[in-house]
Image 1: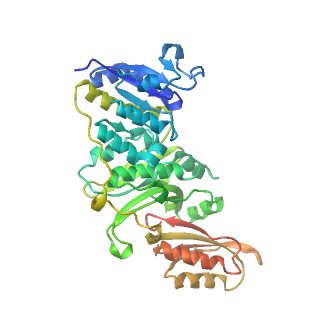
Image 2: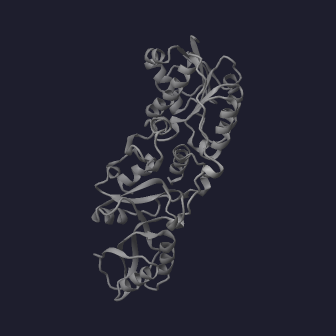
Image 3: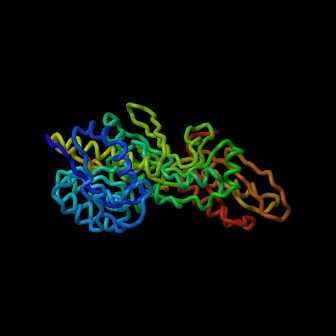
Length: 416
């Protein structure tokens, strides 16, 4: 048995400072659970003079040189909290090559270079852990990897970007952050590597206060959702996985509709367990530091007791991989807001175009009237194919009575 596990920290920013604070506050508990002493061997940061609230830097093993962490043979675990793609990628590869386990919260790095890093960790027989990379303090990664091993995951969807959810909740960030996290979830849930550039991604910039008000009137809420679903229906595009991030209308009665502010929530459906919901703070210093320590403690426990590192499951390749379904094959209901001149026959022409593309209207809402001015015509459709909807929208926007591009928001979760 090893009496002490030494830890190196790269980056003493917001989360890095939280990691140190957790160790200071919970050292006795953490060491009891790990079965060994836990020591911060070195902390590397480009700025060793900037004040960190709640920390006495003079009492910490600070350095500006990352090599002091990466080249120290006494350090067993490296925590990477530098962020960004480089030099974080090089730091992790060097740490793995030196026989060190790595814990990271770097969602962007995993989304862009995950395949390379996963392969290197497996090749070196080291652990690469990333609980803190998705949904902050929610123990989501471990739940999917370990708690749901008896399940075939059917769907994963939810709110994984607190900033966009805060904006929508308060009534006024784009979706790339959510796409990074969804890519990681797809990798572990469906064991299929999806290139980030192939994830259909839309931000919230086209969602207006008017749309949010209409959604409320119709019994819905608008959220930026990350969605991944498996499908074996050959008639709707073949077996595969659909992966997308975009503003979505969900029924007001849905538990997701109540998720507000900086909180995250993720729904997972497994073939054996059914529906699960994970909810909590998706970011912040201490929630993310908590997730970092969940990984560090597991690795420290195994290191201290001479237990080999757990093999990192790689995404399936070849025949076992799930192909990515095109966004064009996705079927769902739609909300449309058409800004058109208030003239006779406009609604019938819009409805006619939708009908030509096999899209039926579920409901129409038109309350504002203003002769010879553009007014909103709001429609909810029955389920339709994305390809057909896009072609219909292009035709609607070419109508002479339509003033601006039609707003389209996908609807999930059934009727309100």
